[in-house]
Amino acid sequence: MENVVYLLDPETALFRAVELVGAISVKPISDLLGCKLTQMVRFDESHWLFVDAEGLREGLTAFTMFGRYPQPLGGKIALAGTDGSESYHSPSIDIGDAAAHFQCCRPVIDPVFVTDDNVQSKGLIPAGALEDLKVRIERRPPMPVHGSA
Image (tube, helix red, strand yellow):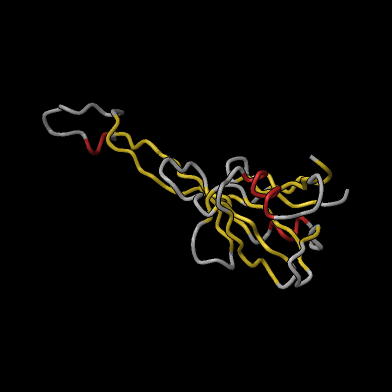
């Protein structure tokens, strides 16, 4: 395969190689990400991440944490190689090694039920009734998909 980028989807936590038609450049990567404004984040000396600059928005159901970046990244992420010039090429890092730098995150709501110990003295709240909803962030490593997608 030529002209490959690695694409991470935080919704599914799948990290896969995707072949682009033509050269690897900002426009086809933005189209792949499904965004209008693309931000670049340095992955390492030989690679860049392309992210949706407007990916953190209301109604967010998943996001990605990248160990070398201080804030969450919303939307899909593409990883491409660079040789220091303005041209990009396929990543030179193994997809599994690259995946180790990310955590896919999603909010999860857990129900909290009334226990026998918490039943009011007048018995107005029966044991087993819904008492509260607790929100937590579930983190999971991306699952590299080897081969073409």
